[in-house]
Amino acid sequence: MEILQKRGALTHFQILGEISKQEPNLKQKDLAERLGITIQAVSENIKTLTELEYITSKDGRAPYKITQKGIAKVKKDAIILRKYTDSVLETMTYYKSTWPAIAKEDLKEGDEVGLYMENGRLYASINAQTSAYADVILDTKKGFDVALTNLKGTIEIKDSKILIVTLPPIKDGGSRSADLDLVKGIYEGNYENYGLSSIDKVAAIGTTSHAVANNLGIPIDIEFGVSEASQSAVRKGLNVMILSIGDMSKNISKDLEDANIQYQVIDAKKSVKTA
Image (tube, rainbow, N blue to C red; front, side, top):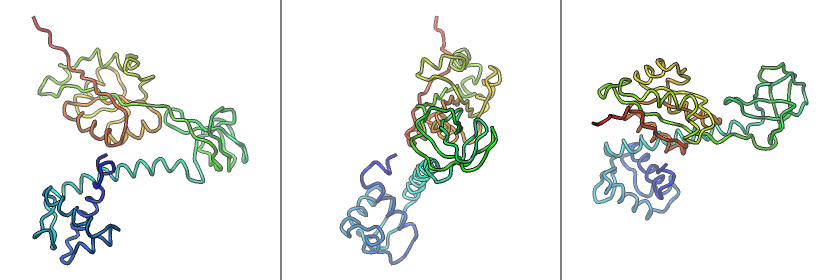
């Protein structure tokens, strides 16, 4: 996640964002005040952004104009920041004062229950021996959502991972050129060879992926918003196998790297035997 890791990247983003507002009288002093940095720092960043062709100016002075390259840079960084903040907000929901969980058995107001994740869902049980506990707010029947408060400890979420199984695009033969035995083997147990204890969810991108899954009898759990949904599943302790097509795998890989999600890419193109 370059915008948060590379020194000065966030400042570049902020300056580009301010310049994109197209204020005709925007000066370095204004930028310094808005960003809480020195005028000298603004000047140095303006010089760098000009060299990178993100903005144009006359001798480094106002008026500043953002270029198409600069607009593309801001959009890209904004999307990365939004995904990151969304993931943080998703995590923070686990720290609010009132929590929902699924009651494993009938629960009474005042019961202290153990909390644990199962199949990506949070469960509450009197009998659970876990490192996280909470108090029941209202009487709740088994299987219904129970309101909890006074969380203590940390909910244990197992390490999980994504396997991206890359299938050949139709121009290269599609499913006919796919190693179906490899795909089926991974789904039925060979996932252990890749450091997974299970395949909890299967995602599919593209027509060929659906054809392969259907012919192998593999149920598809995720077919829309695959990247975001798979990341959410991993954060809940679920392992995901993504059936993807050709270069689509590169886009998924980039998303996972930006989100700091563990993943591995497996080429499922059938080997060509040579004489």
